[in-house]
Length: 501
Length: 75
Image 1 (spheres, one colour):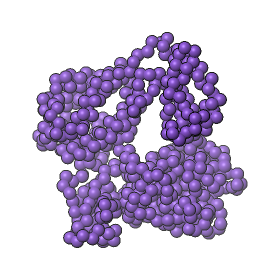
Image 2 (cartoon, one colour):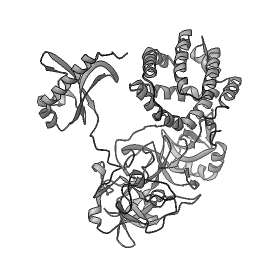
Image 3 (tube, one colour):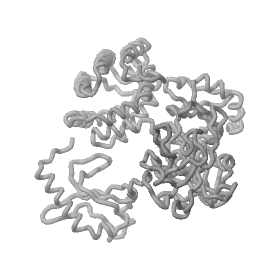
Image 4 (cartoon, chains in turn green, cyan):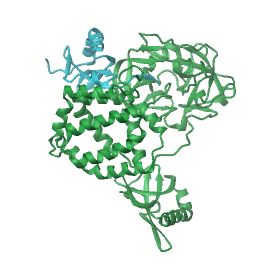
């Protein structure tokens, strides 16, 4: 559990770190790998310790043996008769959050979109610059749903940088005008693409490079493979780039030959408005997803599916071959981030364990599958509610206390898996009851009632039981029926694809 | 069964004739061609966990792998 510092102790340490930063400013500024410093707690093996420290942010951690003596950072710094721990944290390069800002000349991979239409605001990604082969003009490539508002755009519509959602207004931020787009139909689509012609004064308005030079623009050495347009929590979908170029009759500025096909397992990378630079791995080819547009579902053929590498606002990003690849799955990432913010600790390791328990055990039980579906249907709404809720300090303290109390036991149980002989005890339920009482302050009366009934059910069927016995209970049809009866009247919980009842 | 790995072309042939049936049977929101070791497989995208079958599914000799992607939205 985190140590409570006296105000004096805290202020003294903070003052010491401030003095050390001033004293070593020249050294810190000279090393280009050091991107910042702060006062905080030292982190050891992923855990926040009690030790107050001077935290030094570096673009990349480098092993001691590879650093010249002059660039070695000490473990401790001394000032007067006091010493302060030094903690080195790898943050990567730090950039201002300007993928959503106005920038001239505007690089590719940043916010852009049409003026607000129908009362809506929008922003997507300006993929990259292309040449319109019909007249040789300079254009910006993105999606139909970004530049042409899902088939509703008209040639000549103003295109803003940044997009209207990010504060762009017309005519002050106009950078281009919609030139043409490929219609999206209910079926039979292969592309969601459009181009906008850069307006007069092109040289000053745009530049043929990616934001922050996070990756090169498409060239034969760094070929484009797709145009990002849609996604779910663990997949990102891209139109095959050659279909895009053919449909719009365009080519990249580096000329023909700046494209490539992909195979399953290839690494790809992209730069986009929301998640900025991301790299991923091609998981499927010939993908045929049905995408849920504002006008209704539209099915696509021959698409490229990668692991997660985008969020809303990234549409229009050019996807190129390259990068380190990543198998990130964001299906429960928001929840673990919210949990981390309440606990004040990184729960990434616990998230990975929870995902394994989910995949290996829970989803094979009837109640587990029902719960996972409810979770998936409601996660975003609950997160939105969480973001608007002020969690009281005493509730955070209790959550942290219980986390610290049970984290090791949880990890041990995870290692033993369903072979575990551990049982759910009176104490477990006592602590769970305490946690529930605190959580109920943030619930509606209906939710409180349902949580009480579910707790009693869990107590009745879980107390004294081992993990494999609990899994058997979770597969009990009668119990599932009872759980559904309890959950059904709760209006704030969405049960199927319809709106909340 | 042969010892030959299942090729992309073989999976394409299966999808050409059985895709609609697969989509309807599992309430899928899409399919794709993935890989499991040296074999190519059919990946089936599901919106809901409840649609994931409990048993392994093989269609015309090609394995189906199920991925719950949630709703697929334009980004």
